[in-house]
Image 1 (cartoon, rainbow, N blue to C red):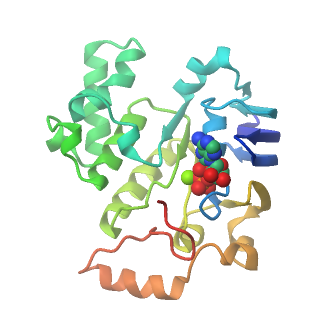
Image 2: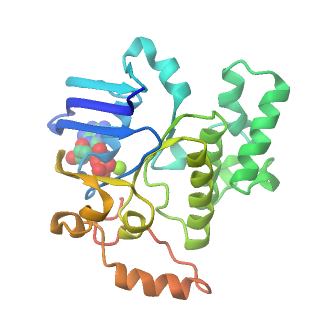
Image 3: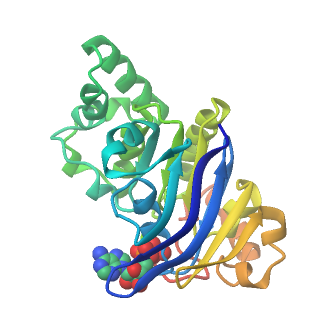
Length: 263
Ligand SMILES: Nc1ncnc2c1ncn2[C@@H]1O[C@H](COP(=O)(O)OP(=O)(O)O)[C@@H](O)[C@H]1O
Ligand SMILES: [Mg+2]
C-alpha cells in the first residue's frame, strides 16, 4: 500500500472552476491539514474523495483503489467523512439509532453493532445521551455524535471537515483525544481548519488551497514560515492568551481566525 489518498491532476467545476490541477497525497498514518479561506475548495475536495462529486478530469485513489461510482460502497467502508455541518449528517430519530445505522448496514450482528455503538459513544463521552432525539442536541453534541457515527464504522481513513469549528476548547481537547486514539491504530487523517493552533500542534503536513489551486503542500513546520499560509490561519499569540483564559472561560478555538467565517 502506498497512500491513504492519492489525487492526480484533479479538476472540478460547478458553474465555474472550483478545483484546478490538484495533485496531493495523504500517506498512511499521516495527519494532514487542509487550509484555505472560505470558498477555496476544501469541502469540494473532500466530496470528490468520497465520490459524492465526480471529477471533471483527473483521478482519486483511496487505499490504492480508484474512486468510481461502482466502488463507492467499498470506499465508504474505508473512509469516514465528518461533514462540515453535523446537522446534515444526523438523520435517525435518536443518538443511538444514528450511530448504529452504519454498522447495521454493514450486516454486523446485533451484538457487534451494540459493541460498536457503546464504544463509539463512550469515545466521544456521550453514552448518557444515547436516547436523546438528534434534533435536541447542541451544535457541539451533534458534532460529537456525527463523529461517533464515523468511528463506529472503524474507517482506515478519516476526512474531517472543520471538526473543531463551533466547539469550545475543552470539547476540542476531547475530540483531539479521540482522533489521537484512532491514529495510534494507524488511521490516516485529512482535516480542514482555520486555526494555526492545529498546524503547530497537530499536523504533520499542510495543503493550502487558494481559489481552488494548491499554493503549498508540505511539512507543517515549513508551512508556518510561509507568509501565504500564515495569512490564512490567524494570530497564535492572541489565541495562546485565550487558551490560557479558557481554563475558566471556554473559547471556540477554530472560529475562523484570520479567515472568513462559515456563513
Ligand atoms: N453546490 C454548489 N454549487 C455551485 N457552486 C458551489 C457549490 N458548492 C460550492 N460551490 C462553490 O465552489 C467553491 C468552493 O466551495 P467549497 O468547496 O465549499 O469551499 P470551502 O469548503 O473551502 O469553503 C466556492 O466558490 C463555492 O461558492
Ligand atoms: Mg467548506
